[in-house]
Amino acid sequence: RMADWTIIPLENLIAQRAGILVEVSDAESARTAIGILEKGVDGVLLNTRCADEVRKAVRLIREAGESVALETAVVREVAILGMGDRVCVDTCTQMTPGQGMLVGNTTEGFLLVHSESIENPYVAARPFRVNAGALHAYTLAPGGRTRYLSDLKAGDDVLIVDPQGRTQVGYVGRSKVERRPLLLVKAEASGREIALVLQNAETIRLTAPDGAPVSVAALKAGDQVLAHRMGGARHFGMKVSETLKER
Image (tube, rainbow, N blue to C red):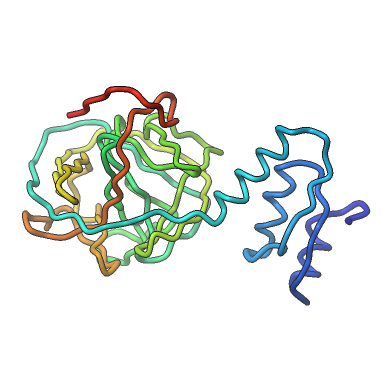
């Protein structure tokens, strides 16, 4: 139990030993405690009489360690489109090669869009950035929720995913909507079509099954990329049971 300061004493304790449980009074304090010095405390004791705080704390802790099932999708078509608005998501996380965000035209499925963490001769790497796709697209958020790319703003949480399906919660520092040339990627996974509209540029990449980045400028039918299938209708980002067809 911390007397006054919370974060600095916990940093010192976590640096010296394991097996630390800390008392907190609300869900946000629980989220902070489990993320301090990246590894966080080993557990929290929530001292509250508010049932909503208990539910929020359980959800936040579950989301911190969630994973998603990825599978291989085969590219069926790459079509060049005209100009349109795409969303560039700048996060507060320095992503490593292989990490990115799951984005899709529909809730049927998502493609793993690689972060701009790759060095190249023309543009400096931006490891905090995912050039995610056209503004209408969905991105997978923590807790199985979805968000429209067009809705993302500073402070929103997003799901950062690696090629093994391990996740971490990231936070948007800036979201940029800019007019750029676009292309459409259609792929197939387990008999279902997964599609995504992306900016047409060499630095925009999907992710191969081995975690390697694949530039959309070189993408062709038969190439393999990582995907996540989900399906189901959505209402304000939450899954609902209703008839839905998206094309």
